Image 1 (cartoon, rainbow, N blue to C red):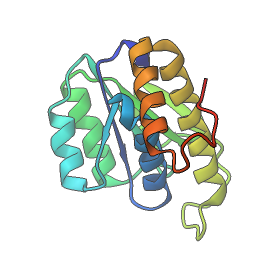
Image 2: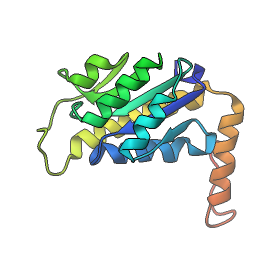
Image 3: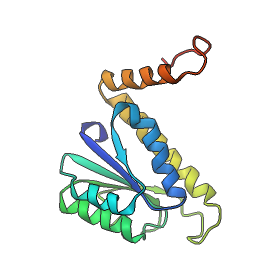
Length: 162
């Protein structure tokens, strides 16, 4: 489904989930698949400009952050599918989402390290990324390979990805 969508935006709450969106953006940036911002107001602005051929991926362990819920509502108002990466067990975000990608509800909402929830969200992002790359046009895979080669620090000492 993701490969058929021309535009995808990824938004996140602050804290550990912001690391997840940044990781996703770093992976998909060369192929121009994803746009993201950590600025709460800009997240809402971007959600207002989404359409039914776009999608929004929202990463939020709690699923209760006000900005994130506003982003989901604005995306839905424009008929853009909402994909949530959130904890199992139900929350406000999961009720708004068209597709829920649940991670284990293994940490308190008032946690210090957010270790397991962040690792679980990163795993889901890696799976989505792998799906996008294997299902998109060869051109996007070539863009990723070319950018990898361009930023290799020691020319000729590393094998390029296949």
